[in-house]
Length: 103
Image (tube, rainbow, N blue to C red; front, side, top):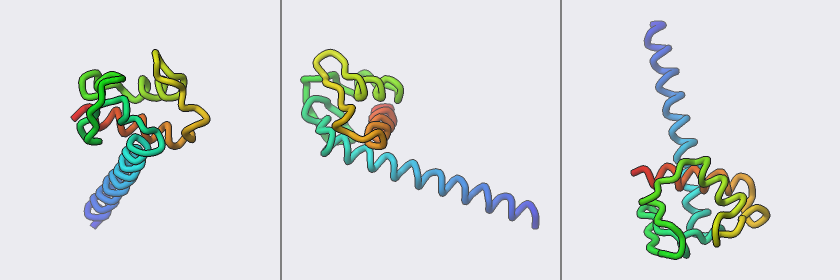
């Protein structure tokens, strides 16, 4: 009985953890396509964007830290989005780009 209970609890934690990740992923995708307008400069297969002003995110496959830094501080011709996007939006878009570009 204890084994079934432990298995059930672990399974629920995994499911809840995945649903949070999916919500964050979806929110990040929305920010990428809308509030951040990232697709006007960046190609990203999952978002269906094809642009060549900024780097192709599928090619460079940036980790979350790199995206957070670039969106927050700007890099090259890319401006900082601090003050344009909320902290939650920046974190979500960084998560989305890093996760979707790895596939």
